[in-house]
Image (cartoon, rainbow, N blue to C red):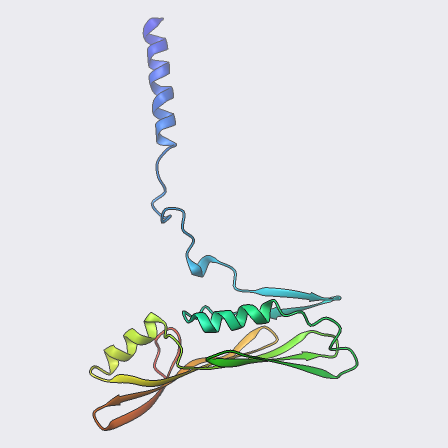
Length: 175
């Protein structure tokens, strides 16, 4: 009987110890940025406005997008067929159009000399070794919650030679 109780206690402790195994997929409780939802929904009566903020590494871009997200349209749109909101920041501007019901229809963002994502920088220096980035422009537009354009227009220089290239945020070079 004593042996039976000892074995029961032993196996009871072993099964509990296996339940304490650390999950190798997590990174110490951190949530990766790609796992976070990117859609911000504003309710205007029965309709919804959808805006997909970009995950740009530049804090000026994010600050202007957060300012737009927190912007309260109120009743300003009433009486107009369309309503335009323009926000400007130190490195660019954001223009948004609302319809007569106050629903967001399109957003156009234009920024200059912003901090580039790591994938963009890596692919430029991999494809064009020895070149330096002279000027950059980030264009981002969406219509009815669908991204229409998301690209970086860059001017790079090596010696006296200057090139203009277009690159996607994932590092894919277009021109």
